[in-house]
Length: 102
Image (cartoon, rainbow, N blue to C red):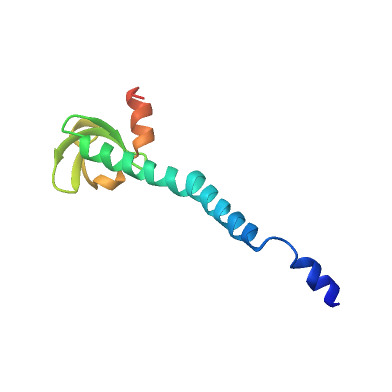
């Protein structure tokens, strides 16, 4: 029984730290960093929109921005219909696809 335990402990103890460090780096570069970049791009997009821009909300409503307040906007839909939304309700990918921007 003790020989099995001794065999498992014969490896370099620093290799375990290197392995865990590599796992942390992989998580950072493939999961955390892209999410931070996507959030930063979405925030920048929300700050750049202005009156008259065509947007699509996360609920699927399409229309032009009629008014902008601090963190809300009024979306003008078909024939003068107006709906108030939060700026966080704008879907960046769908808006870019609908307006033809990249």
